[in-house]
Image (cartoon, rainbow, N blue to C red; front, side, top):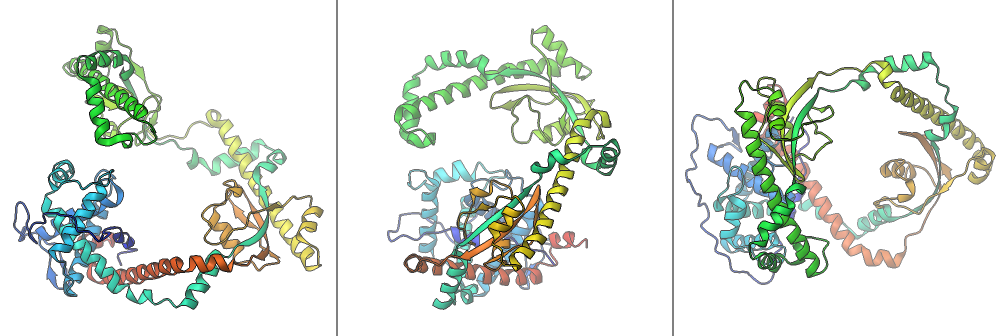
Length: 552
């Protein structure tokens, strides 16, 4: 009904309870600035477990999810461009979990909440110190858009602990893992296999492709859509590069107690101010460079703002005004190459949200506020809007030819791989070895390093295929046999599984306790996820986001 619910085992990140309780002032259970839980009686937010959801409850849960996202991904969901539908769905899921915890009588005491809050604030500080509630509220909560209150953080902590307890309670059946099951799972995931592979790459067959006008024309006609260019724009712009203001910024800093400020920043952050620096001198040099560059960027922005004011006051608003004012001030006007309207120009680095700025430009209002990038400030104007189009064949002949050659080479590689697969089966049935069969076909097999289902990467593949495809092929092929020909993007491969290598009993004995614990956590998470999918599909199917998804 609602579709696959995002996995919520990530809630398990939250609280690492330590033996020492750190002092933290935790306010009352339901304090909230602005108060009021009744919400707008005219709005309909649905009901969960038979209880109507008020507007205030919805907003509180939404703010809690925003905090969860911040702590999990180190950014606010609004800045991550999370869609409104995603936010709404996650808010209702959180409301469902909070409601279920309350129904089961899961309550969090003040001491446990205070301890969790302290640990969370400790995790925010790079030096492992607790960020004070006052600083956290001012520097984190109040800088959100929209801003949050300390009561949102308190509600989040209390409910997150309850949700973790809910996960453990409902996922408990998944913890029932016997030693025999754990041992079998360990062997299944960690047992290596020895294998050889013959890869049929399209690049080896390019020289065999003959390009004819008829074949190229048919290919172009069949794949016209692949060559369609999206809507594009060109911008005229005047650049105020940061490098032009570095000397001025350096002189401005020299008038202050610059070294003392640099030392103060270093004392506060140490080498963590710039990860990668190893000595105090390196860190201070980076701090000094950054401060000078930031001031230079501010100076550039001030000049750009003055230039833009002269452009904006000209009537009527036309793109040509940019060149007029630039000529008066002896500045150069540049033009970007056409770029996708939802993309960015290659001439300069743009900030987040640049696509929205470009979308707002029209022939009647071709200007926008100066764009601040890391290397300078840019006053831009819409030069041209280019509709979507398919370029003439002659303009892209070289690209079409290359694509056609590659398509034909892939087909030849796959044909060769399939034919070898048939011959290999006959040879192995007749008692020949894999090596002899390859030699007869003048093919050189590649011996792969031993790998298992748990192998995270296999550099020997050289990026030619997805590792999971190789694993799927390897572990569905009996030792002493060869796989069928498996297609990849640029050809394909045949895998010969020589043998399954024995698991080292000493290594297994040492690894098994931790492996068993991980297996139980995974089973617990899976059991909880299955419960959540059923519960959400029943309780949330009539919520606004679900109705929109179903077209109701």
